[in-house]
Image 1 (cartoon, rainbow, N blue to C red):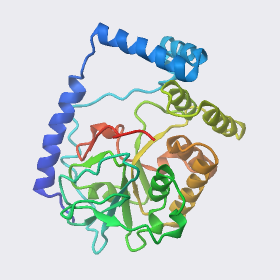
Image 2 (image 1 turned 120 degrees about the vertical axis):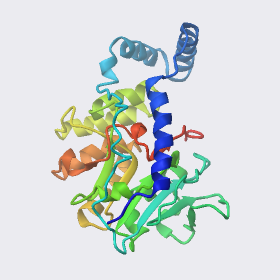
Image 3 (image 1 turned 180 degrees about the horizontal axis):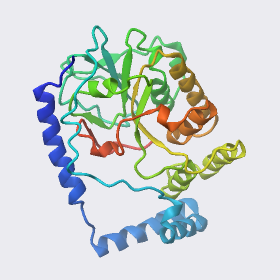
Image 4 (image 1 turned 45 degrees about the vertical axis):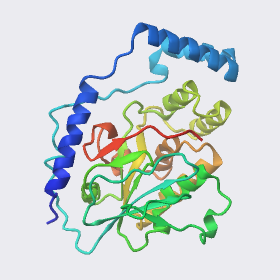
Length: 316
């Protein structure tokens, strides 16, 4: 049976100590900082989006449930990741861990631990260090990727591991802002009879609330997200049907149902917005699948000792 390496455990212990500090003693802002930020936000929002958006933000501040419908609580005593026992020996099966960074959106982060059964791949448009653990994938001869902008390139690569890693049984997508701290093979081990695993969304269990949240923080075109959510509502998609955070995805990517879901997911982000966390629950529902058909890697990605997350370098 595969066993966690002591070096991986040591990395997790250090990372968990960091997580404990951040979650139990969060940074607190002074009243002056909060007031200054609010005033600056009012001016910026008025200039860029108009007074109606400002009024919407004030309404959301008074009625927090409009943009937040869920809260997770950190449990310092949860050491399940550090004590994880594998049930799979993997045999000759290796795991493709991969990411995509285009247009300077993120900075490539080297893994703190290199798993003996994982291979690390990056799709990118810039040179990487020769001694990097990441192996750069050349996409120049991939006709299906020609003509895509940086955002679409990353989404396509994220959704179609079966197109790039046919010789692997398992793949693990990590967002470009993800720092790999320890062995990620545990995520593949947990799949059992499921073909996809993700973390729960820690602040939303409803795509309609998430839509309001995205508008509030000016992260999406209002008309586009409204059109998407209106279409889903007309089809009968229910409120508070659960959500996932799609920054880390483990898959048995060659399985037929997985490919079917990924194809429909890609269609949705092209038909509507690129906000894949909005469309993925709808894709499951349209395929008569439940959230329980997806492996839950945890209630909050930020609580997991195998990972660390950095702010994006820039926004597209």
